[in-house]
Length: 98
Image (cartoon, rainbow, N blue to C red; front, side, top):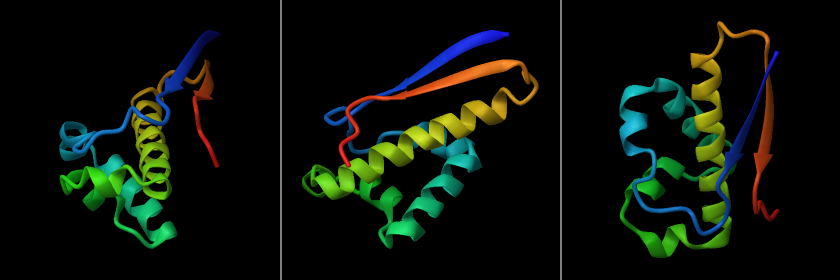
């Protein structure tokens, strides 16, 4: 068995346009952002690509955007690693304030 840890960034690591290049090529990111946006009734992808850092810096949007970004990256990684069934994953979320 292979041990693997995935560490996600916390508050303050966000920026407008994060994930732009990955989003274009990987539909699983779009699905994750759509799912999260529907849940909170706010278009998170539009927020992080709108060039509106002031809005993104608001805690209620920043936390949702960072969590969704992290889940998107995890889901993309998991999809790419499906053939490695013996891989044990440990996920560490840093600085998540709920």
